[in-house]
Image (cartoon, rainbow, N blue to C red; front, side, top):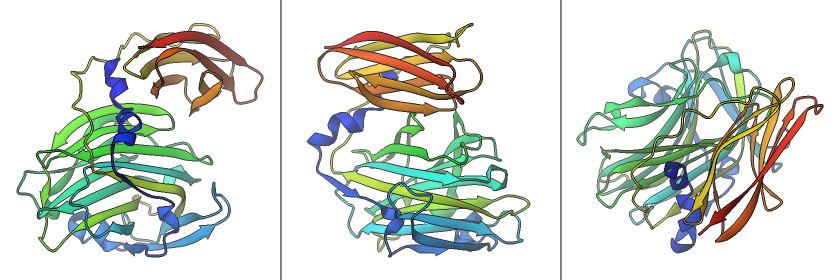
Length: 347
């Protein structure tokens, strides 16, 4: 389970880095947008699209932005972007964090999330897509080679499942990436709704014009074959950029595949080991009816909430010493609740 510990690198190292945090990006009035540029070779079909900022509901802050895509042209997309800084040459480590809410899962072809840094005539592109109707997996943006330009990028599967995320609730997405000391693109981890996945994949940077510089971020919505209308509300959109690098990854140990859901109501904790200020956790829960929330508490403080799933696979940054971890699972009506408590010692 040491691979799961690596996904807490940002939390463990943030104090040692020189960080810049860009908060509530969705409410930034410098927003840019396009439609055709969001398609293949930046020349796709045009959608009907718009964005409305400072939406009070649904919202977590009162300043959400509603993004809309529709029209009649199949597979038409729209992209909204922001330039965060004009010089990112000293920045290496990036964390993208966003909450999103939507209601019409059947209309979504895919959702894209991106941060790109430009320096040394290269584009360090960190792109993720939840390809709902194109494999149903998370994919990352990869150049064909180190001499590739923007037109030579392709999507490569991570093998991490991504069917349509839950509707009518706030989904929380975080990804951690970095530009390595050898100027390559390193995808570190992805977290969706409390589920952390360690990617640890390094790919080349792409070629970019020498006049391009700075740090950009964008969010994209893709239309499907019917081009049905749909909206996504985005809130608490934050990008953190640091001058430091994450520590080199430890040789990964495969995640156990024998962790199963209990036969009767209860919680099966397959691992809850701790070392080096991190506790890695792998557990499964069963309740009567349909599971709604699976929570993890540490020393009386709620740390993780996984919704509509029986799986808890995560890592916690904890101080040295012994800690009480409490697992709690509920069903959708609140009529069935199970708990289990264990202790973990961090050395």
